[in-house]
Amino acid sequence: MQRVRGKKAWQTGVIMADSNMLEAKKMIDGMVRKARAAQAVFEAYTQEQVDEVVMAIGWAVFKDENGRFLAELEYRETGMGNVEDKALKNHHRTKGAVYDLVGKRSVGILDVDVEPGVTRIAKPMGVIGALTPCTNATAGTVGNALMICKCRNAVIFAPNPRSKKTSDETIRLIREQLTRVNAPVDLVQGISNPTKEISQELMRQVDCIVATGGQGMVRAAYSSGKPSYGVGVGNAVVIIDETADVADAAEKVKLGKIFDYASSCSSENSVIIHESVYDRFIGELENRGGYLVNAQEKGQLKNAMWEDGALSPKIICKSPEEIAQVAGLASEGAKQAKFFIVPETWFGPEHPFSGEKISVVLAAYRYKDFDDAVKLVNSITTYQGRGHSCGIHSKNEDHILKLANSVRLCRVLVNQTQAYSNSGNYNVGLPFTATLGCGTWGNNSVSENLTYKHMMNITRLARPIENAKIPTDDEIFGEFWEKWGRD
Image (cartoon, rainbow, N blue to C red; front, top):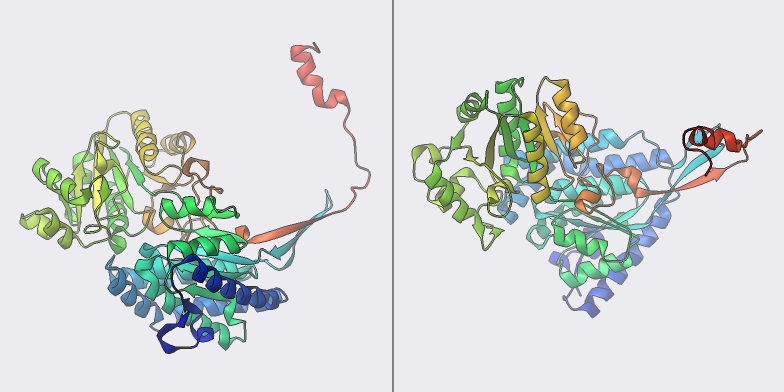
């Protein structure tokens, strides 16, 4: 084993090791041992002390230019997205997550339900292993650290190899602030040279796993034998009905499509537009920098975006200029585009633009009947995006409720930007999170935004109910007997 960049391991919280299983076990043994020692101290903290730690973790990224520094590092390391949007995301999501957490109960008695006589008492889970993606390296790390430590747990991060330096620096800054508030620094640690063997060993030893990233990572977490939280594939589909404020909807779709060059799993991927406003909506998108490709350009784009059925790294989270160059789109409109609009009619493997694109490319569908639009949302997200999310721009409450009642998705956003609000925002009731559960539809264990509430064990203290009433048989079965008899 060797230390990182000549620094002491306790300073960085990051240790390097060979990728064989023996070295992996030896390294993870040491990290988990330190995490358990730190967590044992942390478990005795009061709610006020815990909230101070949460503040310190948030301040590590929000402080001065740290958010921008990490955004620049993440961009240089991964080549994905852009610095301005990453810096904004680092500040906005960190601030929002701290705002959501501070003041909430996560220590001791949470509540007392007097009538049934049950008192709920919060307890930590222990040591959490967190697997983070390269598309959300900084915000994902600090977001998970905040909710995990809010419940007096320790965390060990296993980043994507493509963003390991960003993970190192984010963890270093967090540990720096933990030291400042006299908290155990080993509450937050990270693996500097993540490998499959090391990640498997981490999952084997921790008490719980949070897997935010690709489906391979999520499946590995669920098959580890440990309690796990994972995410599903994003492929947000948005309906634009005939009552929509077309200009407002176009602006919000554009913002979600181009933010950090679509690095978010919530980035708008397809729009389903009523025929009466189709041309006007496409025109509004074009006014905002969208470029509507023709049939030939669609073919060029398809060939550039998918290689052997998989998305090409040459276009994932890349600028529109880079995509145009890779695809050979030579027109001035394509060269100056902020995003690309691809007309589409169907879904599935033969229509890859219907799937998740992780790029500034938007599929556009036309519909006549609202029932058909709802069916199309389900068809597209069944192909890719099970359980994740969809949206609608509408003033028709019947349409809004029909969509929400009909889709097999965990989030339906109304008149909002998907990429801004799915994972929490100040103008939406969904909590800030780095991990979006997609329910059984997406092979996940939760169907909501993962928060601190999922990071605690709860002891239920149950007292006897005074004068408890035992119901009669007739009270329970009377109506059933009356309708169906007793046979």
